[in-house]
Image 1: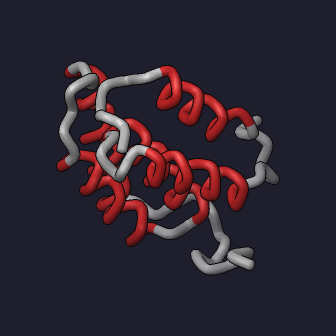
Image 2: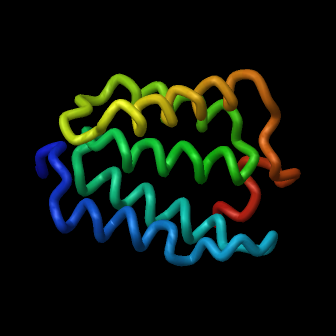
Length: 113
């Protein structure tokens, strides 16, 4: 298992997760979810920025409950490499997930195949 400090692998996995995110409404959210989930798995679910990324993907896919669950996990993970600005951003995302509706109109289980 990798440590929570930001290794080159962590950076790469975070970058590749959003590499396919073009801002286009038809972005490939299933692929993003798969990349983010794999990054989280490879880091033993201990890397708060990667968990935050996975929560965001769930949010964008319209799965509010899963986004909240994973964001809670991100906030509870050891934040050895997270500065206060990043932590504040993660808390803002959590509040947003709890108080707003996700932008995606897709059903959370759509395109899981």
